[in-house]
Each structure stands twice: as C-alpha cells, then as structure tokens.
Length: 92
Image 1: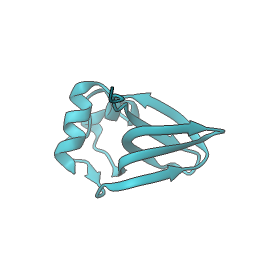
Image 2 (image 1 turned 90 degrees about the horizontal axis):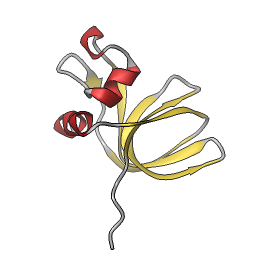
Image 3 (image 1 turned 90 degrees about the vertical axis):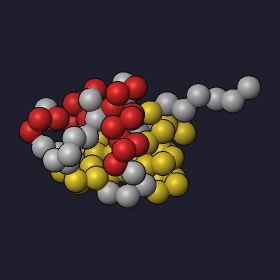
C-alpha cells in the first residue's frame, strides 16, 4: 500500500516559506520532497496562511522545486487544501 503524500506549507525562524510534501518531522526540523520556496507573495493571497488555503497567485514569486530539502527551526507546518496544492503544482 502506498503512503499518501501530505502537502504542506512550512515556515521557519529564518522567515522562509516553503511548499512541499512532508516526508519527516523531528525536533523542530522538517524534510520536504518536491520543495519550492515562496520568495514573495502578492496581497491577494492574504499572507502565508493563504498560501496553504488557495496557493500562490500570478503575482507571487516562486522558486524552482528541488527533490528533497531539510528545513531547520520550523515555526509552523500548515496542511494545504487540494486547491492550494494544485496552484503550487502550476508554479513548478
């Protein structure tokens, strides 16, 4: 049986905002696969929580995806809606 991927938006103490699929969470760190960085978002997204609810819009700057990334000093892990996940995929 295959494990369902969990799409998340993760924030860090260093003000990083990332989207990806949670592979591991341990001791304030997280490993994401298919990880992208949100460099900036437009006001229509309504903050980093909006990135988990509706995903990035055309006014957002999103970096390319990497296969796997470990994030340190995680401050929040937000589960993404299906709508947000699809919007992030469009930015890849």
